[in-house]
Amino acid sequence: MSALLSARGLTRHFGGINAVEAVDLDLAPGIITALVGPNGAGKTTLFNLITGHLAADAGVVELFGQKITGHAPHRIARMGLARSFQDLRLFARMSVRDNVLAATEPVSWFWQPGGVRAARERAARGAQALERTGLAPLARAEAADLAYAERKFLSLARILASGARIWLLDEPASGLDPASRARFTALLRAAVADGVTICLIEHNLDIVIELADRIVFLDQGRKLAEGAPESVLGDPRLAAIYFGERA
Amino acid sequence: MTAYLLNLAQLAAIFGLLSVSLNILIGYGGIFSVAHAVFFGLGAYAGAHVALDLFPDLLLAALASALIAGLLSAALALPALRVRGEYFVIASLGLQMLATTVFTEAQAITGGLGGLVGIPPPTLFGFTLADPLVFLFCCLAFLALALALVRQLMRGSFGRALMALRDSEMAAEALGKNVALIKTLAVVLGTAFAGIAGALFAFQEEFVNVESFTLDQSVLILAMVIIGGAGTLSGPLIGTLLLLLLPAALTFIPFIPPTDIGAVQQLIYGFAMTLLMIFRPAGLAGRAMGRR
Image 1 (tube, each protein chain N blue to C red):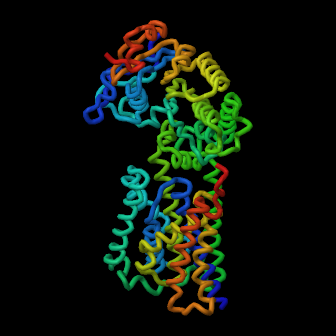
Image 2 (image 1 turned 90 degrees about the horizontal axis):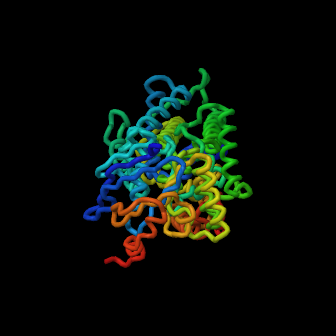
Image 3 (image 1 turned 180 degrees about the vertical axis):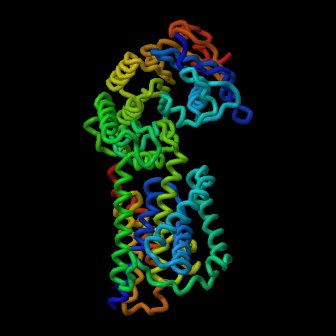
């Protein structure tokens, strides 16, 4: 099947640094792709280029067959591409429920279209996202008051509630205790089973092995390898780069 | 005495409207403006001209003031809103200084330092509102309208979007929020109400000049919002009452010589704000520290 999201030749330089250099990326539907690489490999920059938060120096991104290069982030998001952030960026002074409801409201105006019926449908979608992430009992709490793991789950709940079909997740499970991590990975698997396509950045190779169907290995802005987890992670040359034993 | 108290109550309602309107920008939108007095002034001049050149209808003056302040703010805000956080403060400071100069120099429109004088008492549906008590109720009605609108909007999707971009612009964008549009709507709404406050002020004082629309005034309105509690419904009202009544109350303290009241007031403001920011940074009506 053809890719839902495909990037060709994405390039971004910061001064003299090649943060991302001519990277191609294809996200095939219904699988989990992991971006792997040492710090500074350009993984988060690649996300920012795809979501429109950063302008690319060169390259093209297509989402559902439509060219989105140069579009504003909110337009790209509304097409069904959601992302999480390494530092979460929750709406800290809003309630957990409002964090999730905000993700269900598509129109930037004084009111939403569709009247009471649509509002009820959005509220139900938000409640379901809280239920699935186990945050329903905390719905009225302020996001800033949540514990670390709860914040991670709220970040995911927002994306769930948004109804997006493609998720870009930046280190979504880092720092979670084993029990929370198991719940988290189960949620991601359930989403994929529902037809969601996921691309995630992850440093913990255990999580990568557990979740990823496909791995893209980046180093110093370039794509060095791509393929099934066992073949990429089994490559001694890449392992040496990943663990900092550069030749 | 009654006249004095009525006058004070009218001012409290007008400044309440101002701080409630600035709270939309600062408290809910995180848009830190030190130029609110500019839009208060634009509204006052617009209202004064409607009263002097057409007829002194309160609703017509309020409408004209809201339109002029709101539309001009949209034109000015669109480029300025592209910059974030502290840079916007500087941009708004520039606007405030520019406007003070324009208000002073554009004599044909603003009357310069001499201002616009002899503004007749307002009329409503053909009746003249000569009774200060009736005018007070009109001011309170506008304040109540603004409060009801803010309450309604902030509980709905617009408020959520506005507060979302206050807490993280990038995350709001990533969830499909058109940040520039939402900010512009918030600024237009907030400054339109500031314009209405200006029209009321013109009728209340029967005279307007640039001295009411300077940086000092912008800072005073800002202080009302922050001391009372930015981002809360009642906070700006509490701040307004406190900062308006404090100077009035000081005049009743016998051992302060009248000439020193200004200095004492500044000392109290300074201390109060410093202590507040240390012990209760979210303002009097904001949440207390220590829960986080």
